[in-house]
Length: 480
Picture 1 (tube, rainbow, N blue to C red):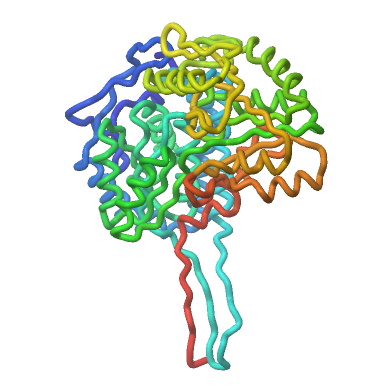
Picture 2 (cartoon, rainbow, N blue to C red):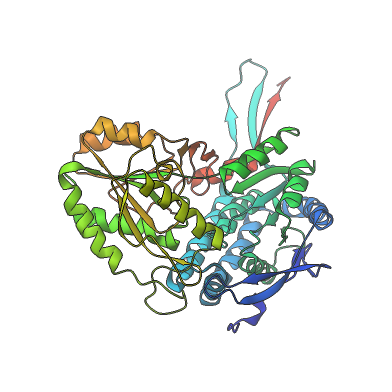
C-alpha cells in the first residue's frame, strides 16, 4: 500500500513509546477483495500488563502537566491528523471498506474530538460551596481517574479511538487501547502521529490482538486500570461489566442499537427520504446509530416507499477507493450470513423483499428494501448492521411510540414531522438517549453521544464528555 506518509503504516504494538514486534502476528485483510494488507503484532496478557505498567508510570508525569501544556500537545496531534487526513482515510478504507470520502469524513470527525477536548482540558473547574458551619469552608476539585482501558470497534476504527482517548488525555489520564482485530492499522497510525505530536512515552499504548478475551480480562482485572470505556456489542459489554464489578471500576458503555425512524403524515417526505438514506446506508448500514426500523404513517406509506425505492436503486456498490461508490463491502462473511438469516426469517413470516435481498460476489450485500413486516419477526428485534431498509406501517402516534420503544435498546431514534406540539410529545416519549428531529445526522463533537437501557451509559463528546474520566474530591476545611 502506498501512502504519502509511509510512516503511518505501522504493524507493531505501541507500548511505552516504542514499537514492539511480538512473537506472533496475524493478517489484516482488505474486505473488498480479501487480499492481505499486512501482518500485525498479536499481543497477549503479558503485553497488556506491560502497557498498563507503562501507563501507570506515565500517569505521574502526564497528570502533573498543566492543562495548557496537555492542550498544546493535543492540538499538535489534531493538526497532524488533519494534515494526514487523506492517507489516514485511505488506510481506513482499505482495512474497513467504507467509501473514501466517508473515511476521510471520519478522520476529520475523529480529529474534532481532539481539538474540542484540548480546549476543555483548560476548563476542568472545581467549586467553592458555602460552609454548613461558621468555622468551616467547603471546596471541590476534580482529578484524573488514572489509567484508562479503551476497547474500540471496527466500524469507526479512528473516530471511536479519538472520541474516548481525547477526553481521557484532556483530564490527565493515560490510556491502553485494544482496537478491533479487524481494523488495527488506523489505531497504530494514530499512535505514530501521537509520537510526532510529543506525547510522553506510556501516555498512549495500543495493543493489536487476536485475543480480545485475554486482553479484556487483563484490563478489567488489573487493579492499576481505574476505568473501562467500551464500544461494541451488548453481549460483550455485559461481560466486561461483570468482570469490572469485582473492583468497582468506573465504566462507560456504548452498546448496540435498534434505531426507529418515524415519518408522520405531515412530514416533508423528500427530506425524510434523504434523511433515511443518510442514516440507513452510511458505512453499508454498519453503524450503531443506523436506522433499523422505518415506521411510515399509513396514508403516506406508498409515496415514501416509492421515493425511497428509487434512491436505493441508484446506490453504487463497490470498492471504497473507486470514485462515486456509496456502499462498500461488509466487514466479514459472518455479517453477510446474519443479514441473510434475518431476511429468510422475515420472508418465512410474510415479509416481501422489493429490492435486493441477496449477497453479491465478494463481501458485498445488495442494498435491500423489505416491507410487510411485523414485530414478531427477528428483524424487528435484532440490530441489522447491514444495508437493509426494513419498513413498517402505523396508524396513530400512540401506536408508533409503543412500537418504537418495544426494544431493549435505547441509543438513537429519528422522526420527521411539522407539528411542534407532536414533536415535543414524541421526543419526550421515545426511550432513547439521542433523538434526531427532521434530520438523519446527529453525531457531532459538541453534543453528548450515548444511550440508555441496554445501549449502555456514559456520554462521549460535549462538555459532559470529561465527567467519566474525573474523580470529584470534596474537601472540608475546619478551624477557620
